[in-house]
Amino acid sequence: MDGFLVREAVAGGLARSSLYSGRYAAPFHGVRTAREPEGHLALCRAALLALPDQVILSHRSAAVLHGIPLPRRAEPALVEVSVLEPQRTPRRRGVLAHQLTPTGQRVVTIGGMRAFAPEEVWVQLGTALGPDELTVAGDYVIAGTEPYDGAPPPATRAQLDGALRRHGRHRGVANLRAAAGRIRYGSLSPQETRLRLALQDAGLPEPELNYRVADGDGRVRAMIDLAYPGFGVAIEYLGDHHRATSTAYRADITRRELLVRLGWEVVFVTAADPLPAVAARVRTLLRR
Image (tube, rainbow, N blue to C red):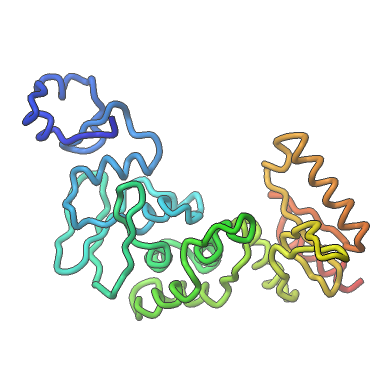
């Protein structure tokens, strides 16, 4: 049972006393669920039951739906929705509603929930995120997991640029424009994007992302997170999942040994490494 409206349950013959007995969770006024919603998307689903049909999931809530990475400080507590003018914003506890001017925004339906498309959500995040955080989000929007598994990205670069143009001079546009010029296709994680930005901010050349290393017959032998092929320098970001199993740990060692045999200098980076220090290490290798 995903959830239901109290008025519909009563109309269907369910005793009102049962609805107020504590048997069901009440995440929003007039809504009942079998248990407290687990996770933000379950909360969104419950909220949309009680909201008008013209409401569209937006901003940080839509970012969660699309998998757009958000910094921890910006993770949503309230369900964020929007309506398009001249519709009026609904008022409901636990919901943050916005009224937007129609500019041809793209709307999609995922899991039965209407939401603004990823490129529109990126623009909406301009008031909540800083330029580097928007760059992280934008890298994901135009790449997704395609460099790894070939799945189509959430949106194209053209769609992202179009959404920014339609946004005009509204709030957040300075942050969005600052980020737009630094968004690149190819990053597979927020950490990779942050590392790329740190290298560029240190004045180093822009690295190639998820660079494929092939052998003499064209067979791909490895994919490097960030690479300087002209210098033979490879940078690999090791997240926690790399040490979660002995298989992953061994695969990292095997890949490094392969790259060294092929003539690459390999720099491993973890979350504990200060990015300015990493940039200094890379600078030394490039000079060498």
